Image 1 (cartoon, rainbow, N blue to C red):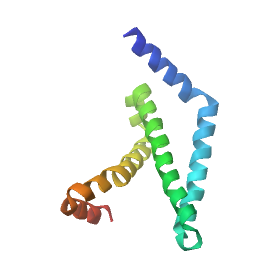
Image 2 (cartoon, helix red, strand yellow):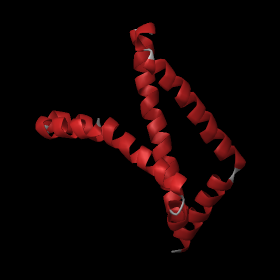
Image 3 (cartoon, rainbow, N blue to C red):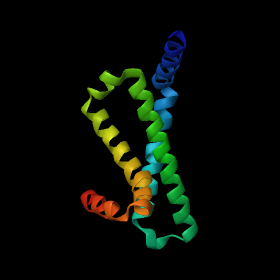
Image 4 (cartoon, rainbow, N blue to C red):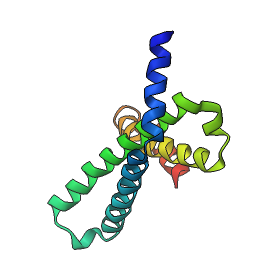
Amino acid sequence: HQHEQGCRHSMEQILAHPAFNWLVNIIITIHAVCMGMEADRNRHSAEVLVALEVLEQVFLIVYCIEACLHLVVAHKRYLSSSWHRFDLILVVLGAFSQWVMPLLALSAPAIANHLMILRL
C-alpha cells in the first residue's frame, strides 16, 4: 500500500511539473504538423510516409501514457472535466483504429468491415 502511494505521488509530481506540460504541448504541435503532412500524401516520398506512420504510433503511445497517468492520479477529478473526457475518447478511438482494427481485419474481416462503416 505504501509503495502504491509512493508511485502515485511520483506520477503526481510528473504531471504537475511544468516540463511535462511543455513536452506534451510540443508533441501535440509536432503531431499537428505531421497530420498536415499526411493530408497531402501525394507530395511526399514513400520514406516520409512510412516515417509519418511510425510517428503516429509514437504519438498514440505518448497519449495513452498521459491518459493513464491522469486516470491513475486523479481518476474522478480527471473524468469530471469535459475536455479530459473528450481527450480520453480521442485516445481510445485512436488506439482502436490503429491497433484493434488491423488485428480484427486479419482475424475477423467481416466484423472489421462493419466496424469500419461505423467509424465513418
